[in-house]
Length: 239
Image (tube, rainbow, N blue to C red):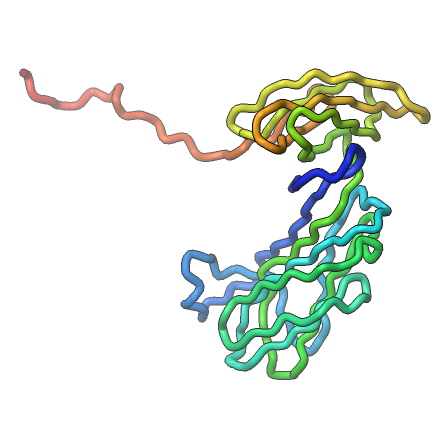
């Protein structure tokens, strides 16, 4: 998901992974949270892969968020690494949930697949992965002829990497009320195109999506239709 903006060529983006492969039926203290989790974390290392597009080569700090759910009724100490670089430990106890955020150099991240390693300290230390997320500085480059990003209200943004000049842009800050934005398309080398967009006003930042004509915006939500019964013939009082 798109986060805050940094400059004219990059923005803060977050990629999250949350698997539903293990059902923890015995867990009863998790409130409204469902009982589905990702892989088991133990003394055997487990890796979570996150695919990061457009990793900018900048001297900035990224962040890694790790959420775990305890299974064994023991103290937990889980070592965390990113692409082989040790980042710290998630320390908690028993069947509780714990989330830790670690600051990591952006230089540790790579374009494409990144590995988040998790390793428990002891044989009796068992937990489950709830989710992992990386927030990083991302280039304003389209993937599959589309990009969603955040930018300063009223600012001008440039998005590169399109393979077609037929482009549209929408302000999706309020997803239930998207509004079209003017787009200026410029041809670049190698058969690619760049879109220049002036962001809307209101608030400090705006969320924008630029995409090829005909792709269409993803719906904000999908829910089943509940037909009205007002048109059915029913008995009533004759007043």
